[in-house]
Length: 165
Ligand code: RBF
Image 1: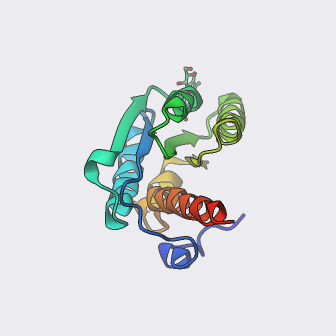
Image 2: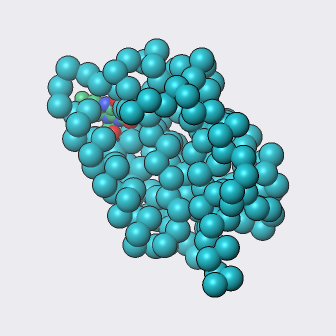
Image 3: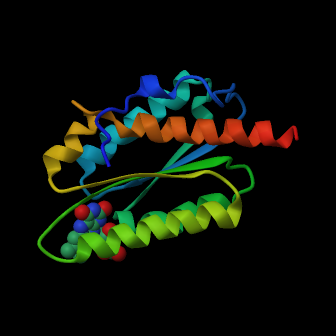
């Protein structure tokens, strides 16, 4: 799955609508904090540049990516939260933890999406090395935090569009 050809310039256009009044929760994993902080900065900057008010972005942290799902569920339970962005980095190690954590988080986030009918974005890097993660957190492959925020914005735009039907 090649991702290096993707950049924010691919994300202009469809379903980008005014986000004033929308409320976002960002859940950030503390594991590999250097990377997750950079992803978080990218996500916040992108939300602000699309008209989201600073006070409408709430950030919470969890110890590791495995905890993202429960925190996302707590945020989704809040009626005033429109979308949730989950940020984490899981790096392949020598044990099977990588597979267990990635599977649990991917499935868990999908479940919260469907249970609450709100965008819950999978902003979790799953890489072989720390360098690959850094390259995608403001490095040579852009910032996937920006793209996670754009995904939330586009999904809310689509939802508003569908409400007109
Ligand atoms: N959390 C991450 O977000 N990224 C990791 O790369 C990561 N690797 C882990 C490796 C091991 C061996 C263990 C025990 C935990 C790891 N975690 C990682 C933490 C995990 O997401 C979770 O916080 C803990 O397992 C506690 O539930």
